[in-house]
Image (tube, rainbow, N blue to C red; front, side, top):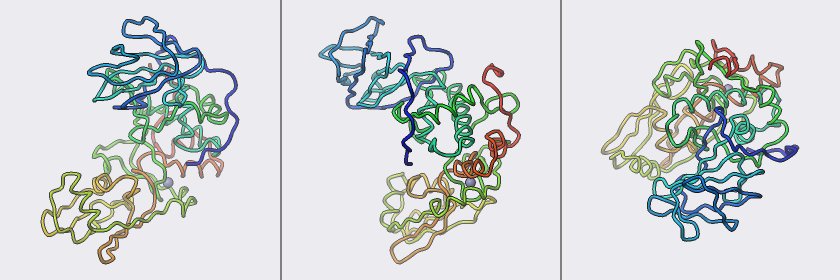
Length: 367
Ligand SMILES: [Zn+2]
């Protein structure tokens, strides 16, 4: 997504020397073969919390169960700066922690929730969108983050920095409108029966949002699916096509563990109530299988089959997938929210539309 050139944030960044309760821990790199750190006035501490003097920039390498810097061994390194910590040249607010995990270096950025949200907005949408849709994004990202934090309290980090959770790329793409949306919704989250909701969201539903039970098999009262003609104004951007050879599809299936050979076709199953493909049949000489539409997306690639709202056409040795929408379709539709904001709806109305039965509350009210 293109990020517009907007005002950078004024002033310097305050480092989180004492980590407050509302901080979140984001995995920004996993299994990294090396990490280079730099920054103005960088304070580095080792295993015992003692400050270490290092020549900057410094490259950290993984060692067996630890980290190596200039020939010395550490289990954990912590970096904090009065401005920003640069990790492989990208700036991050708050505290950056390095430790050994999964044969490489795990880099976790810990920072106050509200600062995390300002950085996240332009990774997920564009802050140049109508401000009410940007505010809706801030509320659902805050709700999602706090929900994950509660679920992963004892884990090394609360959130991935990718589409696995929410995309986050540090503070470089913050701007004044992202800050405004976060500030104008400060501390606001969505609840259902007094508890944080699972605030799933996606890019474009293609006409109707999806019920959570059709994607993950769990029935959620506020994630039942609603009509959303609003995102269709984003067409043809929301429409997609992809052509894959039968050989390519077979090799993708095999590398996901499906033992089949002689793939000869793909048969579309029935559509569910929201117009998405319920199941897909893979026709093969040996090992043909029928699988759930979402599973098929996962196997072929979420970025290739962009949604389960698609049709299939066989053309000789190739399969043409033509679809509408982008993402799993559950919860708020980002492009739909944008259009609703353009139509004059406030963020509260947009949120209650996509998550019916929920309440907008302050985090402090549910603690
Ligand atoms: Zn939509």
